[in-house]
Image (cartoon, rainbow, N blue to C red; front, side):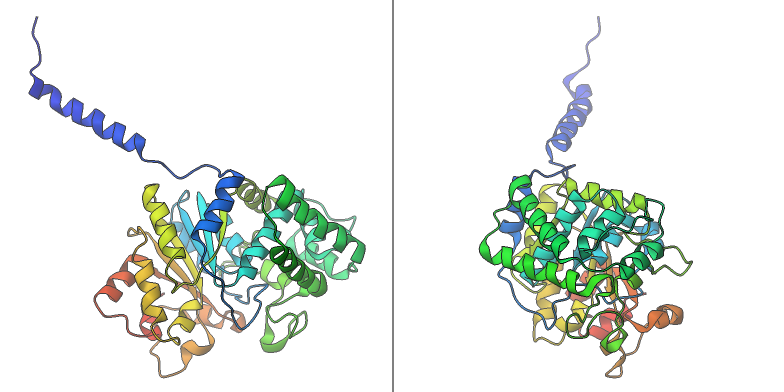
Length: 384
């Protein structure tokens, strides 16, 4: 009988050892318990700050244009990072990450996401969701096959109902506190009152400027909720989270698994982004996408904040597919900036409001580390 030497067995032993190590690395969870979700929100958040508007709703009409190219670069099952309110749902539904973290300097954005979480979980379908979101009776003609245009036309015509508002607000708080075990303190309770009141007052035509610009197309031609949910990419495809019943069910399921983690976090702050980066490293995960809206534009106007932010981003685990999504507009044309010709003129004209562009996160971090990122214009010129 012939025996293998210990050296001939070494590769097998090493392979088994490597497999054991790989299996011991915690992967991203398929769902979070209620306790885990609230703990992450509490542990990773920073002290809240303020912004010049409440930002109840996005004002970016060109946000869907980048989705087809993102799907060629970013694979499902990754990690989504974002900022702001409802536009994140559309990106999340399209990209299908395994988990999402939403940063915002305002505590109000966390409370808005908690409101949305409850509404997703207690609403059966899109028509039910919109009825609860805007506190309007559900029109009889709506069903799961209704288009976004049909849904919003019906709810624009429906009258707001103060009795429904009080019932829905109570249901939101009860779901968060009793079903999900969220410790809803007095300040957060009043904050949810404030956010939900805006959607009752503005209705389906609420826009970014509410209440200062009214509802509908107010100051600056801001798009309203209906406009944003009827937006499309350059081919005419609507990716919005309310575009189809399947999209709605996907985000409803994602929220029910506690996989959207809202955080109070300053992009230039000392904690939130870095804490998420460490969490991803601990779970052997890569930041797939970071939707930044136009926050970088403001950071470059605030002393050393932009540099602090890119130092934070540099702590995230990245690879060649990790991608920034940013919106540009307004100030990006001022100050003699040279704009990257790869940003299509068609996209720049889209709706006249903040078209979206992308860039490699890894390339941007490398440019920052090498001292080649010195202004917001440099950021835009690395985008396409």
